[in-house]
Amino acid sequence: MTETPATRPPGGGPVTDEVWDRLHAGAVDALTHAYVPYSHFPVGVAALVDDGRIIAGANVENASYGVTLCAECSLVSALHMGGGGKLVAFVCIDGAEQALMPCGRCRQLLFEHAAPGMLLKTVSGIRTIDEVLPDAFGPSTLAAYAG
Ligand code: THU
Image: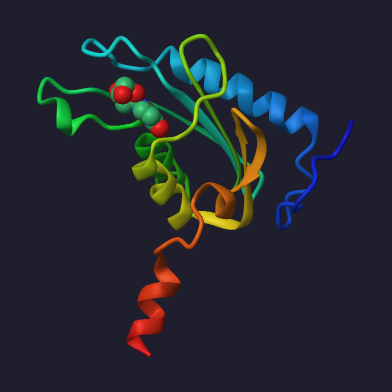
């Protein structure tokens, strides 16, 4: 097994090809749970948590289109409902099971819950959360203002 560059998940071992394969499989399974009667654009996501569990999510649309929940929303809910923790590695795929870039809002969602150096498998290879959301506004920003 080859090891991806960048970080090792804290306490979770390296993000190996096997881990990426498991995340991809989790995202493929999640696609089957997408509720997309309006866009017909299912999105499946999966992530490795820093305690070793793998969580997943799918998009859930709404007749009031703007109320749609992106797949990342259900993943973050699953993270907290399953005991919390930080995201170490993340995969997002489209209905053809190909890598899909998370939308801007969802990059912000992921940033909030990311372990330092969280990895994403993207259309341009493996990237860190800081590469896909540079100079992010986040919890430390508010903490700095609070003094
Ligand atoms: N979508 C996601 O679930 N996550 C993303 O990061 C990109 C977009 C969904 C929302 C909507 O249900 C569909 O893709 C089309 O925009």
